[in-house]
Amino acid sequence: QSVPIYLSEMAPYKYRGALSVGFQLSITIGILLANVLNYFFSKLKGGLGWRLSLGGAMVPALIITIGSIVLPDTPNSMIERGDRDGAKAHLKRIRGVEDVDEEFNDLVAASEASMQVENPWMNLLQRKYRPQLSMAILIPFFQQFTGINVIMFYAPVLFSSVGFKDDAALMSSVITG
Image 1 (cartoon, rainbow, N blue to C red):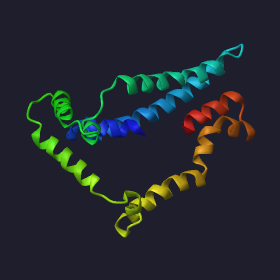
Image 2 (cartoon, one colour; image 1 turned 90 degrees about the vertical axis):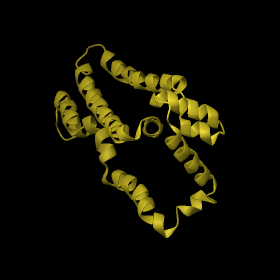
Image 3 (cartoon, one colour; image 1 turned 60 degrees about the vertical axis):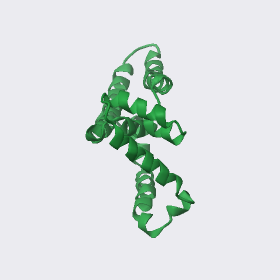
Image 4 (cartoon, rainbow, N blue to C red; image 1 turned 120 degrees about the vertical axis):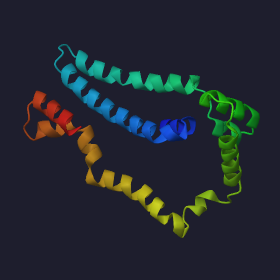
């Protein structure tokens, strides 16, 4: 959840949408790759396949963990913590230009406006935010209610239980994924 926020805060405005879509595409490709690897790992003898499948999940986890340690703070977070000089210098560095005054002033103004909000959680219940709040609740609810997460997670078991052989069940989960 923090990666898209980090990308949107660090990227220049003209690339934010592309990076957000690219992030989601990377997740989808990763799911496909994991399903395909699981299919091929299932053919290994001696119980090695499930170990490789489980161990392979460590790769993206390690990348994100190391990235969270070595990646710099965003200018927004630096402003929120009161380090405006550092935030401006960092913004100049990541944008690669000296003239960042307009963007920096926008960030400071947005930060100051957010600090003026009283009871931000209660504001979510206001009438003007109800469509966004409804969508934020209903989309995950219906995702769970329709059972797609269960189908995606237990696809090989589900396909095996309806009569598919092991290879066909794993290939069907690749196709479903």
